[in-house]
Amino acid sequence: LGAKVINTNAATRAWSERFFRNIELIVRHAEQLDLVIGLENPGDGSDNLINTAADGIALLDKLGYPNLRLNYDAANTVSHRPPGKPGGVIPADDALLAMPYCGHVHIKDALATPEGYFFTPLGEGNIDCARIVQAVAKTDINLSVELPLRLHRLPNAQPKRRDEPVPLAEIETVVRASLAFVKRHLANGDHSPTSSLE
Image (cartoon, rainbow, N blue to C red):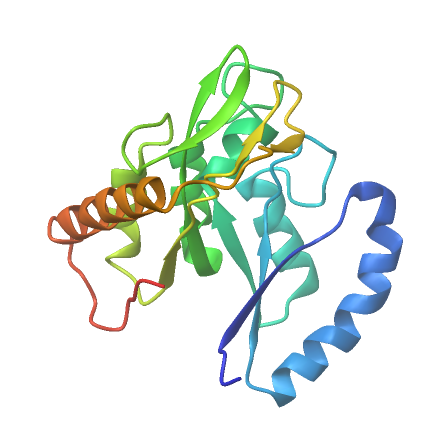
């Protein structure tokens, strides 16, 4: 396909033995394709090899493969390790800690409520997406905007999909608002011409 980065989750700690057994083979194959593997932090609250940026950095340091990087998603962190709870982190702070180790960054915003975590247009949730966009603008990392409008997470971080499709007009409104947010905050950073929106 000509892709330069492929994103995937690492593994829950329960599956870590299998992850460590398979990762070398996968990384070697990716090297032949000149492909970077971006390991993404999850959002479901399970105990994972990458619960926070610090875990991801430690994992990359342990493995030592130059084409194995992080794909950081701060909106996953807000449900996976919520601020103010044991093991919790501030999503934007954690994203900036991860940034030097990233091969890719997902950005989406989420609003934490007593009913769970709901994805919003960028800038309308709890993530402080502006700081993340401005940090990415100073790198050559690709940024993709994620808008899972049909999905939300329950208070226990488990995903739930709404039954009905999202109306096209709602999708277009959220996409326009989110792209305008990114462009506005890229203009406030030192945008590298090699950064892109997907």
